[in-house]
Image (cartoon, rainbow, N blue to C red; front, side, top):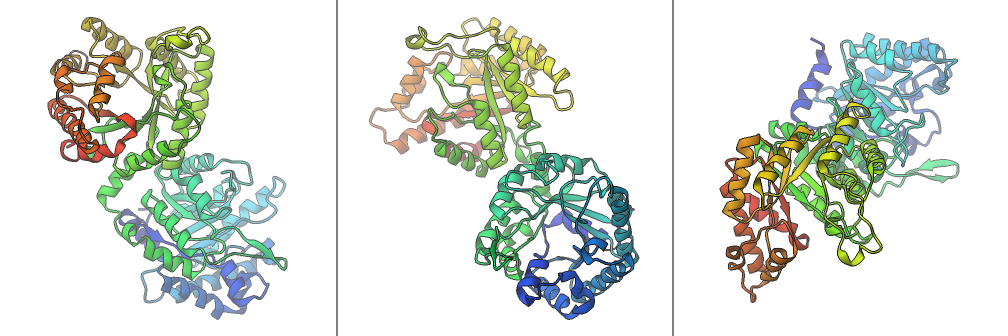
Length: 595
């Protein structure tokens, strides 16, 4: 078995809890003792100081401490390797002394060796391997490679460490999400995911907590590794030629780390500028999530790993899938849609969908809106893409750009016509219908997207006058690669019977459309102004003109529950569209019905 000793203990703990690492050793040492010398030199010259700092972090609540060896290499110490070996051995002894009588684990800290270039590559690669060997001689089997811009120079050392140890690899990125070697955060995580000797990966240093959250939130659980996040306290100021961190934002830091822990981070801690006080406040702030990583949370995280790969066919916790439509804004103010997106995340929604200028009226681009929501919330998103406005060249270009930005799920529709009032100046394209666009995507899946195919579905208009035509359209869409279908809003038993027939005759994966009207005026407008939506007189009769806002919403909620009860035996999920962005109604609808 690979995992034995403290590596085995770490592995077992990570199955059931989020672990807190210590904060920055170097910047705290410099602040505390103001010596101006390399902190690693204290391993031999002032071991009592090193011991004291380790103990402060342990008392603050850290469950993993890193040896004071970030710069223990021949270049930083300006010494031969024998001195490096002694430095590392002393550091390990001090750390072990600090954890005596506790359940805190000791990890080997290995930082970059300056001067890495292709001429020195072989020599530097060897030194990393030699450093790992020294730690192994000391009996250390947890290794932290931190603040690296890429894996290139440490592959062999990681393999050496990972043969019998637990390897954590952490990259440093800037505010734009790139390392000094030019690799994006996403690419770094992908590369770490391919390395079988790496057990946990993530990021430290380079950016403060706010930027770190924004850059890595969507990357958590993108592969099968545990995820580590250790941002800086913030950004330093230069005072008398020295970098000084503001140490008054520990509360803010702790809140961000709480959010990242909720999002699925497995190891949390701090880098430059973080002190024992930061760790203490972080431990207190994250107490509600650190000890809640049980089987149900692991199940949720495993679903989150494929957030934008659409294994969204099943809802969270085995229930039916819930999709909610959020219409992009008519202008540039996205505050309401972003507020709604975060509320839907808290409500447990599985997928957010974004219509493509419905009714032929200009709205913000559905793909770009979806990308922003995905990036800022980490949710699974699915923009609609219609055939009205773009030719094949533009469609292919849009799909390529979307894929680059990890938008891989689409609802493919033919599209509503342009309103007659603007037809004189704006022309529809309609080079092909939804089936034609699906065929294009199918071709691209075999060519450009072979490694990560796009997932796409179609719409069902169950109210079409000629039902046989609609049934045949569903079959053609399935032949063109559609793997799911979203229906027009359902309001009648006739609609339900037709959907049941489609399910029985095609086996299609169906998300039943639910649109809870909120007033008589709202219902009347939809009945008379929106084609494809069959609002019955019975539905209208349940609304009164003098209803209060609350009464109107409650009526819509009750009708939605009734439709869910009538369809739950055969549909695969529900597709909600809320008038006037009243997404708060969702919890009242699904609380009793979505089992």
